[in-house]
Image 1 (cartoon, helix red, strand yellow):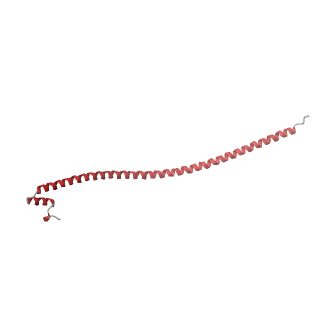
Image 2 (image 1 turned 90 degrees about the vertical axis):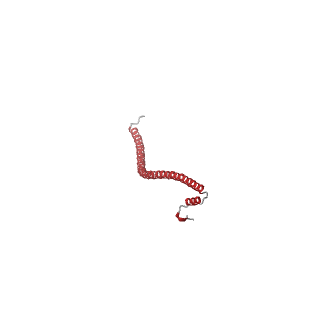
Image 3 (image 1 turned 30 degrees about the vertical axis):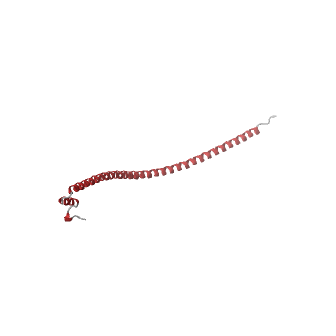
Length: 138
């Protein structure tokens, strides 16, 4: 119930009690002690909330920095992905060129074998011809 006459409640109640000759002094002291205890409790709660706010502020700053780092890493990752694609294309080109070189080497090897066979055939034919031209000795 609101205090009569627009007073402040407990203080007015304690003052009225004292004016009636009751134990208003002890009630006022108890009210003051309760108010002081409540103020200490609120101050401790305020300090705890301030610590939590400071911690949350540091966490937000850390998360913002992490977000920037992730964005930078994303850009770097994209650059690396593009470089990897270029290197893969170059490797494929070199692999194809290497296969062409191997095919050409194999072709030269086959041609060399053919020349060797042709040489051996011609040598045998030449030797046969020389034998046929020599006068027969009996």
